Length: 367
Ligand code: SAH
Image (cartoon, rainbow, N blue to C red; front, side, top):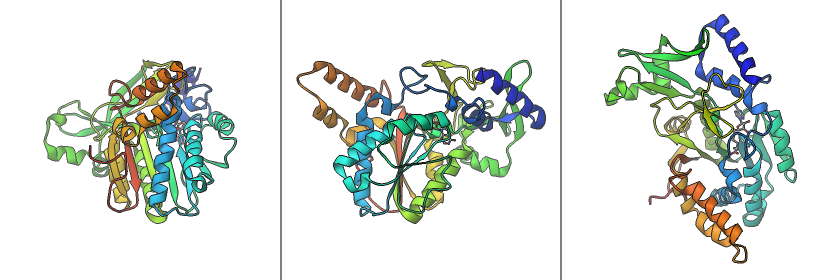
């Protein structure tokens, strides 16, 4: 069992270096070659542990494709553009983006596709889903060619792990994972000034709000900050756009770590290796990292606003078939699942990194 292997790994690490930073423990639980959750088969989809938006309906990817085509046109149709997806899962989103591009912008649809994916078993599934495209896989962003990049990430940042700090009445302390007879979350050393800055804890202090109560938890995902800064710098230098969709919020407050197995919430640490561990993405952190790198960040707006503005209802009506009420019911149920506030509509947020400039693209315009 992967959870036992995770426990043995964690106990050994803790005995060497002391209690673990939560982002390191989460990264190992998800991506470690011996027991990482993302290396197992059948994790995404109705047979797996969770269902993502691209798996709900082809409309999701088609509309993202139409949006990227619009941004590509607005950028002056750069000839040597690249397409890129971070954390492509089963490859469904990239496949649906490509089928939309083939209709809307055939020149753009021929662009090479770069996938950032650490899991070998998911790469195998992606190979099958995307067999008609030229695909290049990477473990990280470092080797992406210096060319305009049109990229998307759905439920990628939530899988990058997050660190936590807890307020003890006077200071912020690291919140760490320890093990005695079972896993425990413990209070560690006081945050340094640089760490306080990374957690954006200084801005909280200035607000002087009741968020400073003893026991308040705040979060910071080092990989989220690092990856968004790398992509923002790339987009500033070479052009392009990066569309980010994830469940999230615009501040660092609260313990948002959660785990899911077989479509149900479970306790994260005793199930690590067998469950999907994620956290709510802090869009404010992505915005700060992107702007510090010299790019522009737009949003976040709700998934509901984004897909309504770019025409999900019109797309459903186009696909609807008056001869087949079953198909129509499924289409409008999918629209509801993606945009209604009772389902994914408000929980999920959409943000965009583009080069400096003015104006707001469709999806992000004031309501
Ligand atoms: N975007 C897909 C899948 C989301 S699951 C969908 O919407 O269906 C998260 C994806 O990110 C998986 O493909 C996983 O293997 C990948 N992933 C997780 N951590 C990663 C990391 N550190 N580097 C690269 N890929 C990662």
